Length: 339
Image 1 (cartoon, rainbow, N blue to C red):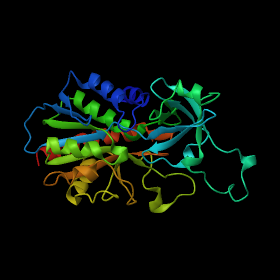
Image 2 (cartoon, rainbow, N blue to C red):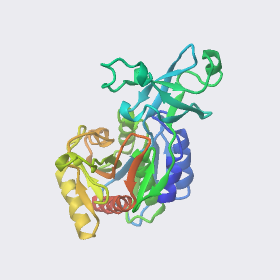
Image 3 (cartoon, one colour):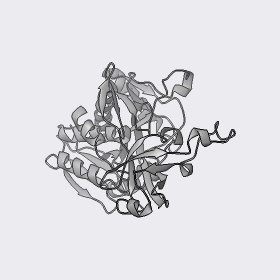
Image 4 (cartoon, rainbow, N blue to C red):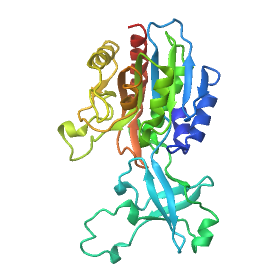
């Protein structure tokens, strides 16, 4: 999965612009499963298993990542932009970026510190106060390279460091996509449905249509979730921790999860020596929010990868947690299929 994950994190695919990610995934799964692309852009795939299940099980991971979009070009050739998905302004300023399909290099800037008024120095600037510098001399030069509506992505490499840590951009949710690809390439015990969804970061839109089309009895959302196991954070506010395995949620801002499924995930993990941990904050949300209310309702579980610095250019995960997520996802899918 590590090679697949590295490839996925090298691709650029913001909400509504998942084409490159979708193309890569199709190349990976086309010889292992039947698939089609729905009108919104989701990949809907069916993997034949060794047995016919009693229940239809769907596994979902989203292809899109957070990013930005150009909405104005100044007279001096600087680009104004807004976010596509939730990005903390604190992680934006000073970062290198790529702009547009031609991957024009740029840097995010703001008013220099020596020009800030005293009451501005202690405030975090908003995105509307920032700009992207692409080295243009004026608006005419910038417009030869950039158009309004062009997407902007963090420029950040994939590398391993420390004791099994990985740093990359877009680990939310290319990690989930890597898990699903690996499962499709395996030999599952039961037939399974897979949804690689679009536009999760701007409102769970792809998941809504995918769940409606597949009409599953059970769904498992494979995600990345915020780990705050850093200096100065204690107790439940750590949310989850790297190195302690897969994260299973009982509630977030979009879903109150089925507790029978939640408990079963922990039971399966314990029985099979898989590390697992609860998410200790009711925060965030994922595709489960749209899936569990689809049609007449879907029994839904969320299995997440703990990730530090989520929605930043330097997301950090641990390899062993990714393996735990993959193992637990397979076991729960098989359990739900034959429930």
